[in-house]
Length: 73
Image 1 (cartoon, rainbow, N blue to C red):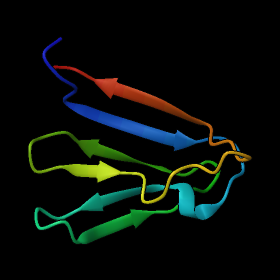
Image 2 (cartoon, rainbow, N blue to C red; image 1 turned 90 degrees about the vertical axis):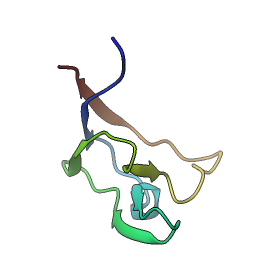
Image 3 (cartoon, rainbow, N blue to C red; image 1 turned 135 degrees about the vertical axis):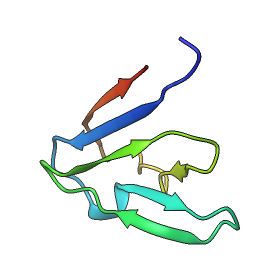
């Protein structure tokens, strides 16, 4: 496996909406913020222009659960 070509993440447990995933532009500005909501998520094509991360760390007393599926071609 060279790298992940595409990925899909579905959130499966209640948690703070701020614990979703943030997609960024090349200049670091926010392109889209995917809130953390049960039974919601995203599909993304992974390439060098796809920058994503959690916007805030998960607090120590909180849990975030999701299913992540990656696709390799």
